[in-house]
Length: 115
Image (cartoon, rainbow, N blue to C red; front, side, top):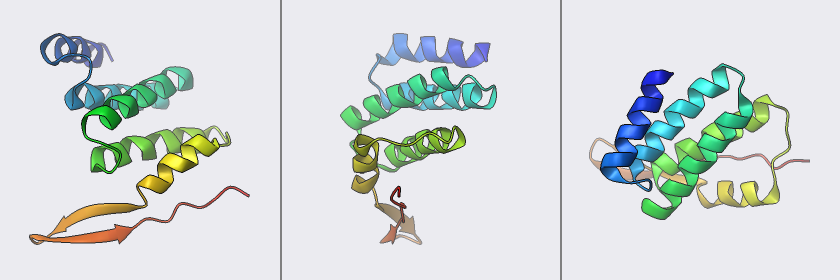
């Protein structure tokens, strides 16, 4: 875990706090915290990653979708209900652009609503 923290510090110093590579490192570090059962730290890092990606690449970017998916996984693992705000973000990326053999196509993603 120390290497992720070192990497994060280096990237923040060289690239600034709001760079997609910083968001990627935070997402990777959140993954480690998730699997060591430190859910509060994982949530903080996933949320930070989303905030950075939203302001740099936008909410329709694949990296944003991956980070959002990771946060949803964290919430579902905790059997914690998601908020309406979270569902609103999920609905903005129901369609993810994919590249397949040089052709662009869209793949719909199903997000179940809470009952």
